[in-house]
Amino acid sequence: MTKHALNVKLLPLLLALFTLLAACQDKHEKPLPILGNYDLNYRKVDGKTITDTIYQVIPDFQFFNEDSVLVSKDTYKDKVWITEFFFATCPSICPIMNTQLKNVEKALKRYSKDLQYLSFTIDPKHDTPSVLKAHKSKLGIQNKNWAFLCGDESFTHQLGIEHFLIFAGREADALGGYAHSGAFTLVDKKGHVRGVYEVVQPDLSVNQKEFQRLIKEAKKLFQDEYNYSNE
Image (cartoon, rainbow, N blue to C red):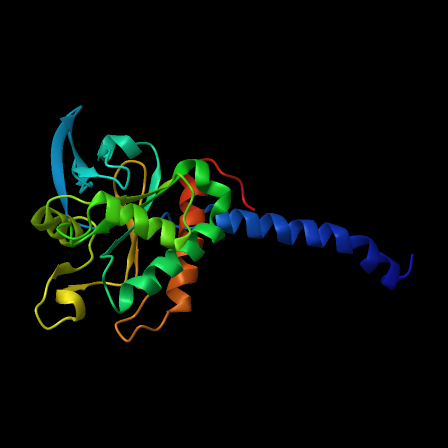
């Protein structure tokens, strides 16, 4: 057997080995971090001190959706969430955010059965359920796993800042009277924040790296914790 023939024969074996090594490397990638505050709980087991980390979770809430139905955290239990904070009369960043979240929805269509989109208005006085319903229709969003929510304003702002880890609040000098982050938040089915992605920048540009990071990490979350196979 010539040296060339030997190399040709070994080629499929080498390709299989490289594929296996790559798969092992992917499998052992670090899991996504859990963001936010946490507490440490100490307990004794067989004379040894065990430390448990108690991670922050999204607290219970009650909001009205665009169909005037009162919903809570439990309404969307056992699903991954991707969220935004916006308001319907926003003249600057919000339309871009809505569009980018529609692009996220298209990119993650495969996971729609286990994925919930939540758009929280930070101006509930104006953004009543009927206004949100019209806004959703104007955006051309028909899928049932995307809810537009309104509720107590101060609680909504607090929820965004302290739990979804984005800024949302009144600001007299801001266009429309409110200022908020252009970020989306990824939440796992246990209510832990796993990522915050500044997709829309303050200058209204779209950060494609952040967009792709959100898509990649959402897929990883489904693969690691929800038994989805690689595409």
